[in-house]
Image (cartoon, rainbow, N blue to C red; front, top):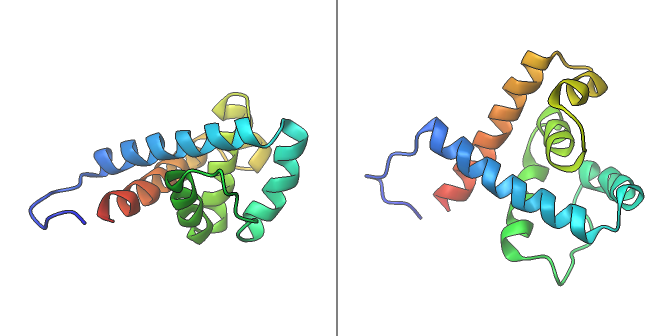
Amino acid sequence: MRDDDDEVTMSSASGEGDRRLTEWGRWNRSNLGGPEAIGCVLGQFLSGPRQSSDDMPPSVAEVESIVLELLNDLREVIKAEYLWSGHAREKAKRLGFSRKRYSELLFVAQYEVGIRCLRF
């Protein structure tokens, strides 16, 4: 737990969230066996916890549990940003968001993950 004297800025929290989500996405992409497997797991991921994996690092499991608590739009943007390939503009369009809205949701998602990881 952080000391009360430690100030967590929005920028440091979102940076930590991006770092942790990048690790989570990398682990998922390399351990799910390709795009088809990722597609199958994503349905589970968005609807609730998937079966735990003994080889999932604790830091990845922590991020996954945080992500599952977020609002659906934030989870969708996280899935797109960290698991899909392509440019943000294409991801936003695929999700039905403007590029600006996609960026706003991504920042909020990164912040939420980061602040929760930094506080505990």
